[in-house]
Image (cartoon, rainbow, N blue to C red):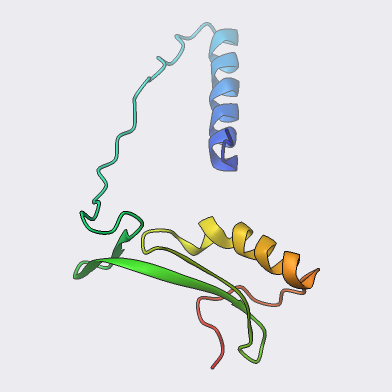
Length: 116
């Protein structure tokens, strides 16, 4: 289980706050055991497709095609994910795929568009 840096920082800040409150004889903050629930739209026909939302009006089930290419547009690797998967969530997998094929990478830019 991986805890994000943001969560670890928040936990550290809360721990320091608890120590300071205890030192000064103040009441400790109550622990909140909230279970986070999230409603997810699922397609009835395609199990791997993701619900993509871009702004208020553009909402649809879609796939995303992620590519790793050079400055001339030559594609070294690609992955297809559900439209709801952010680029940063699959970047590690794509980089591993490409490094397995061609070796060490020299990255100049990570961008949403491949040069034409």
